[in-house]
Length: 109
Image (tube, rainbow, N blue to C red; front, side, top):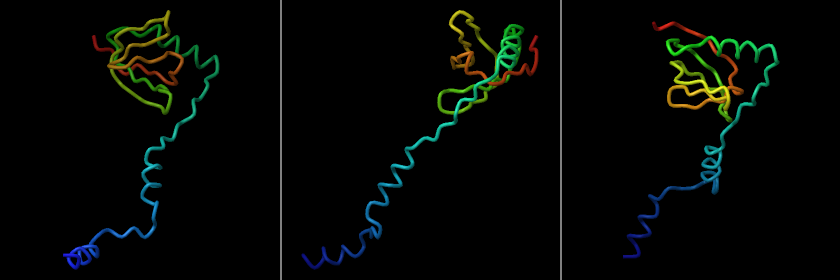
């Protein structure tokens, strides 16, 4: 019986670099973050002016920072809450201060 086990060991995976597999697994879990670009006052005013002109019939494209990276989405805004400085967009709540670009694509009337 021992002879069979010894023969079976030759077919086991060989780990030539011990610990290398766990190192690869650790690097897969590292998430590289983009840095937030702070906009100047003129650009922030331009974004706020654009937001004030948007209505529910507008199809818009919005680019914002979600804490890790920049995301671009297109669709219709459900609600703009100026008091809390939030935009309810698709299935997402976006901080107005995290918006870096907004564009009205089409008026869907």
